Length: 154
Image (cartoon, rainbow, N blue to C red; front, top):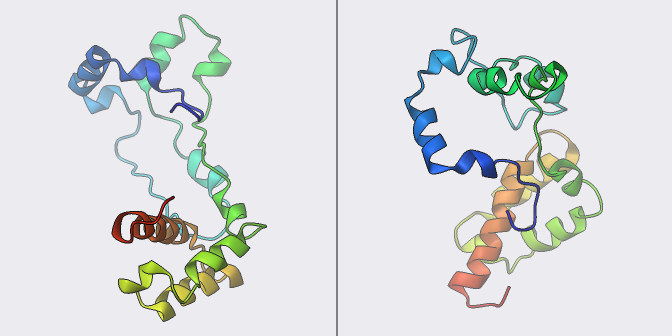
């Protein structure tokens, strides 16, 4: 939060959170009969497909804020915010991913099969599967192993 984009801080007030927990779900969501799910590993962009179907969250907040901000703001479609990890794991940084995850001396191989990790990296690079979340997890785990199991400096 100190070095990133953070817009939730006003909503982290203890009294507001306690109130929100007591509000019935039917007053927070418009369409309870329709559950929206998303497969993070599905190839391609999901932004339009997923967020277009989720126009119904935060009803009470939208109604209260309608008194203070224009309707063009309160009626906005939900917008996601995430890092450009898909491009990180296919662009210039892929050399770093290869260097860390495909290194025969990687510490994560104490826990994972080198062939399995190599297969995941290759599936992602070949475009057969979007493995960006797994790659991120494996990179994080490798660094954790180096620091906490092997005493290396970050």
